[in-house]
Length: 191
Image 1 (cartoon, helix red, strand yellow):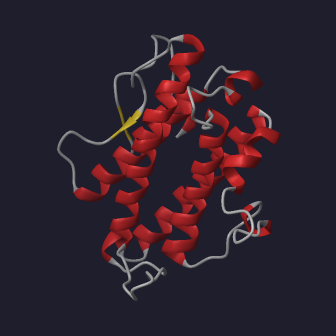
Image 2 (image 1 turned 30 degrees about the horizontal axis):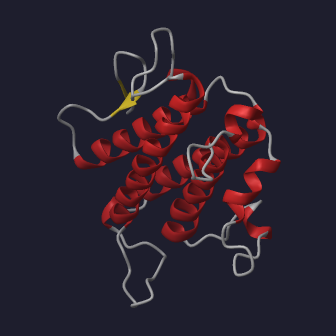
């Protein structure tokens, strides 16, 4: 079940069970990040702040990679889908950050939305197959196997860190700040 706040944005229930709280928090972070990227042209997707090389476009592409890497690859052990499967990560470990400048805003949004859709499907599969307590397919360098829950928390953290970056970049473009969009913004169609 998806909970929506008064703006129609996905949210965690006020007093719900752990799974719905974690997934609601993740969906809220996804929706807020996507909103930070709305309504901008190529220049907006390539804008930087200060000495940083981060752009909204590179953040969007990075988060698409993280969605596919965490939920499909690390949690379920599946091979990476395109375009990630064609990258030699040993030669170009920052490929997603660097290559985003070659993509249009529409391509970046489509890449991210497809990755989120795959992640949601993986999440449904995980919940049907034992939930967040089960071990992930991933093994750390120390031989430990994290729980699915750990990766969900890590994904929420990844979005939270990058929302701060996105907020600064978006403010530099048009002054839009904060976590709440202007009146009239809708989210429900994206869930």
